[in-house]
Image (cartoon, rainbow, N blue to C red; front, side, top):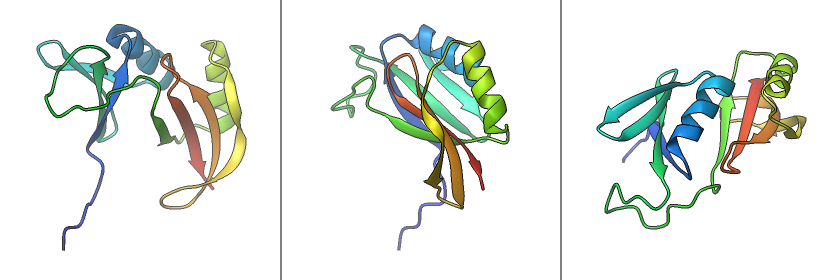
Length: 127
C-alpha cells in the first residue's frame, strides 16, 4: 500500500511573483529562492511553496491554475498575540481569530488573513 509521509511542496498561482515573494518574506519570514531560471519558491522549515504566475504556462500538467483559490495553514512557534501585532505592523488585516481549529497533529488556536492574491492564510499554535 502506498503511504504518504509528508508534504514536500505546494504550488500557489499568483498574479505577481515579485509581490508574493515580498509579502511572504516580509510578513511570514520565508526565504525566496530561484530554483530554475525564472522560477521561484518560498522556503521555510523543510518545505517550500513554488510560485506560478497566472497566465504563464510553466508546466503542461497545470489545468486550472487560479489566483486566490488556496487555503493554507502554517503552524508557528510565535505566540498568536505577537503574530497579530506583527501582521498589524505590516498592514495585514485579520479575517478571523484567534479561534479554535482542528489540526493534523493536535488542536489549534488560529488566526486567519489573506495574502495579496486573496489566498486564505491560517497561522496556528498547537494547544
